[in-house]
Image (cartoon, rainbow, N blue to C red; front, top):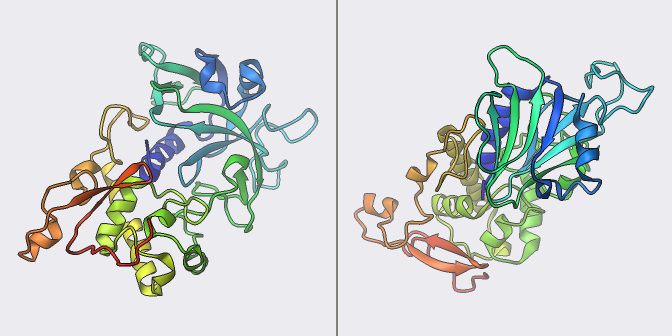
Length: 330
């Protein structure tokens, strides 16, 4: 499943190619990809056609595009070209939400490019020089989908997430999750206070989207390895410096993954250009069971990484530089 860096790679691509463009037509080829839009495909298409994409916003793994136009503006209100913050019209109230699921892809293509085998929804966009005219949602396993969602004020009054024009609005479906480590408005003090109150294992806490969003299984293992902490370390025993270390480690591994285009283990994850990420070549823990720990090897110590079952998934740790605590909690 795409994790935060993969979704951020997609967001950055979409910002460059769809921001400011109008959706001129919508083709729904498989209604299963609209199952989260309760009013059905006709309402979905009718509200999108003529709407303009104001921005592309991400919080954690949630991705949405605030809209101006038919989906956002009842008759007699703000004009379709109103831009939030310029004093013209009301701020957006509706967004196009994209759920990538296990295999969802948002691809920019020209109309003359043959349809992909698993194409589900096609958005035709207003012309732009040198930029493809279609945004296609492709999904092999059909766990993802598109829908329209309401925008609501953020609980803390800050921006909803990473965006080119931050607004204190968040997609209603994402309003329950915490900020992610790459968000400039992330509060370490709030994170540390709530972390200590969890009384659970450290990795379980890192995967709790209500505490910190966007850290999935792969990057949790990588961050814990970099921070030299075991996944079962009780959160209420973490010193402030240790909590800061693991959070900084999460930022570092996700920033490195962004620079490499994300982590891709098969052909299902691609960015909007159709290019896969290559960060998997730099993984230090995840998927390296039975292989030498690189950090220990540099110190002249032979230590083989271990794989253990964790929450119906796997955790990869070094038994030497990430010793399991005696009172660890899973």
